[in-house]
Length: 275
Ligand SMILES: Nc1ncnc2c1ncn2[C@@H]1O[C@H](COP(=O)(O)OP(=O)(O)OP(=O)(O)O)[C@@H](O)[C@H]1O
Ligand SMILES: [Mg+2]
Image (spheres, protein in one colour):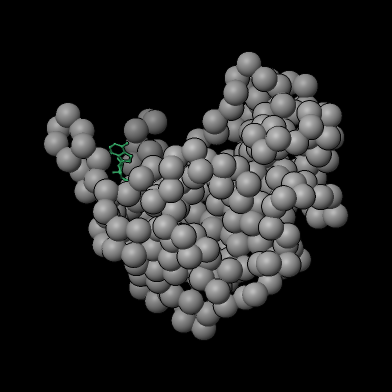
């Protein structure tokens, strides 16, 4: 990580995150439902949890349990139907959407489950985008974008269009874009889902480095239970509800086994569909 580069002098400096023990995200009585043509669908129900500053939190659970919806709400992309999300003590949805967007650009790095690219721009410009949004000079932004592409081993694709890359390559670029502005909070939705074990390890090492050396807070959605021991907070989701456990309070084995069973059922269904 280019931790020595000053990205945005107006931004809170990393030492502010060293007051460990403070809740950086507090979710209270959160509900989400989508109104569709077929009626309303309840996706999240009475979610309550807290993530401490400088944590490595993992959200896991079966497909369709609401993980991406929750991450979208936490990162300001989707308002809840009911309840509050406090970030650093501020009600995130009580501010204007412009303020929320600015806060997101300055504070959050997001690796989406499905990549969103500005298709007319090349990889370098896409990675530089969070810096452009916070007013960083274009030449400096591109230099920093290139440094971050080098970190994920994607510099040779800087001038390609993102959509010509493989799914795994896009995930690595997406990681570079999430980290380029040195954000305080990093949300990553299945960032290793399309990667081989070597690149998966590289992404996980980067996330760990962000937490342990740069005091960032990581919120990772993953199906890979091998990563659970790396986390200090586990949020286990089933049918839009959540069970939280923290340090020394590991998620009960029965929950992990149930999660695995439903993943296996999903996989065998996919295999059957493909036959
Ligand atoms: N915009 C929407 N409109 C209607 N239903 C939605 C919408 N977004 C999500 N859902 C539904 O909400 C539920 C949870 O979806 P979500 O994507 O949050 O699950 P997930 O846990 O991330 O699953 P996966 O592990 O497969 O990524 C699903 O049943 C999904 O169909
Ligand atoms: Mg998802």
